[in-house]
Length: 75
Length: 231
Length: 177
Image 1: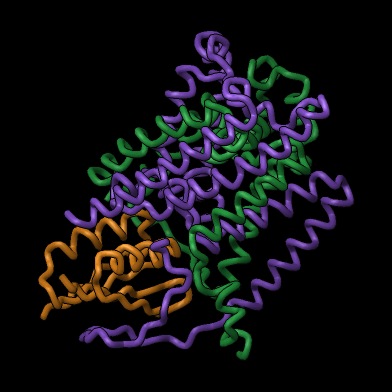
Image 2 (image 1 turned 60 degrees about the vertical axis):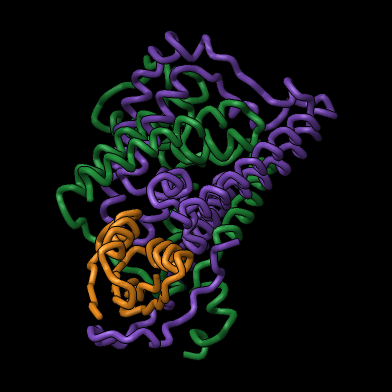
């Protein structure tokens, strides 16, 4: 099981989502992708997309206006 | 609706090796109250000058609050169907169009019945090559700048320096466009027709046609999202 | 600290609202705006005036420009920045968003990360500004207000906005990511 961290701090929409989509394609089922974002729109659209795709998603507010979106590839 | 109203907190069930040590967070709520006090004070000062200024200020603040709280973004609504395959914002924008259509039609019809000039008729603008070129330029610009006009202002409030830069060049672009407006008007805009849908379909017809069209787009957006899902 | 644990606080100020909630509220206040001011919501129109005020401050004159030639436009420019309702509404959007994000304790200054972002902001800003002027508005004035006003122009704007967004997405992925 692999764990990848994607630093998207400072990136504006839709860059975090597109980067997360591309990265997740490279991963295997069961791998974990951690997307770090500080964009308040990305903390909504990245989890929304990942849940829709059926992956396990958790979101953690690590600091004021900074989040880590943890996605476990499910299929 | 596929968008979730609340985002569940982390339950820590996904196993991870890396973890950022959480700093003890400071509450920013006291600053929020300072901003609220400033908003109120500015509102009072403006309202003393003219109630119109005060109203514009207060509604601006309300629009900003709604945009930020719901992460509403007209740019994403137009961009995501192609770029990411998501249409939840596009569908929300369609709902906004439908609700506002009803509100606007009611107000306009009330004025029409009394034989009064209808409010907001200046927004029924001529359709010409200038509309096409302008909309196309705007579409490119908003995607690369990461936000349209309202989105840019909202993100300045959120602390994005990139959008502060974008707004400076938005102003320069607007000024440039205003300088060339004579040319665009003479070449294209004066030849463009103004089409007010009730003139074509009647009042009821216009509202029905527009709502049905919005509903068709909504269904197409739902199908598009699901189609992308199966790929 | 009690406030931050209350469900009311979370629903009103912390967790993002659904897009549909935002849509309905925006449409309601859009309608209120039309009813009270006699004009729908617009954002980008005021920005051309900001340009004119800066230009005037440096001794330039826009009196001969077709765009500013009407008496109304001249009077608005003469009244100045602080007495322009559209300007106040735009500044209000900044203040309202700032209040919202502070209430959620999520404010952070996001610095420009790369030269790519600078180029994107400059180019995007110019295209939006110019486009909004010749098309009579932005996503609010030309699109949202246009469509709500039952004007066909709003739908034409929507079609070419969508095509522009596709081209913009291609450019973004290729050059600005």
